[in-house]
Image 1: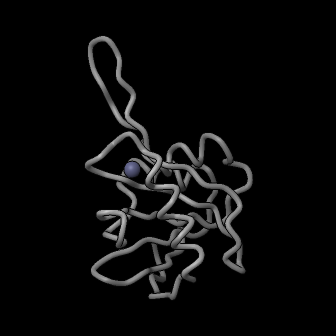
Image 2: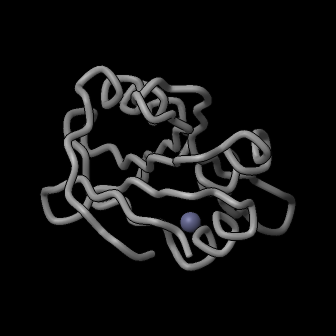
Image 3: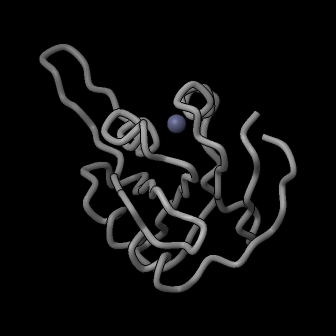
Amino acid sequence: MINLKTIKVPERVLKIALEESKKTNIKKARLSALSIDKKFCVLFKTHNIKLIGRHNCFSIHAEHRLITKYRSDINTILVFRNVRHLFAADSRPCKRCMFLIREAGIKNVIFFENGFWYKGKVR
Ligand SMILES: [Zn+2]
């Protein structure tokens, strides 16, 4: 990511992100990913999930799900991590998700880190 800038995310968007993150079956890490347009309208949203198999269990990150479902239409992705259903916490996408984000042709990523929302360009 390049050109990282702090931004203000509208309260209504954070509310949608928070509600979406509550739907996960992973209690330790409640995350959501939103596709938003330039005016912060929310177009699509997903949350992370844990899949339980016979021999193992693994999680699908919220970003990964969003890309799988809506890849052709995403310009900007916002990633939200829910703390006790109240606050946002650090939500920078992991390496694997950043790879998927780049491959899907998504242009911008918005995430929370150390008390601020950041927007960065994908390169
Ligand atoms: Zn990830």
